[in-house]
Image (cartoon, rainbow, N blue to C red; front, side, top):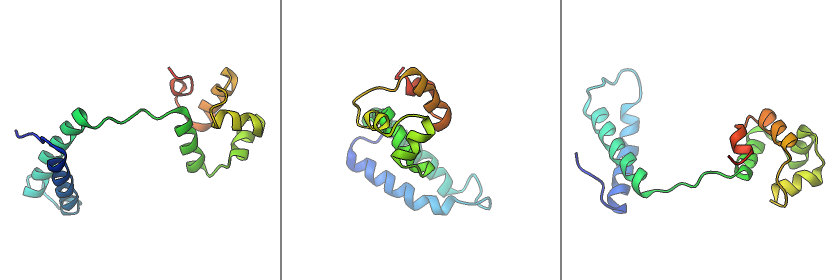
Length: 122
């Protein structure tokens, strides 16, 4: 099987995948259709290229907290109340001045549905 060798080839493959996606939606498209086969092959090539060349940093606890706040429609003040801490204490965590205590980390994990190992930085 061929290999994507550079960013230009990667972009062409991604653009083609975007063209193929609408052609392969639905249960009425057979698995052996040329579009589905091409999509599967290109997807594998793109995934291989990304594994080798695209480095995605792990999200920080702060990134995840902000995402959960957005998803749950919480303001910083609402989040502090949900976690049972002061607004000032929540602000210190949000701006990175302090780490959450073990008790707050446990509550954060439970109430925001964040894996404990992420909250604890393990």
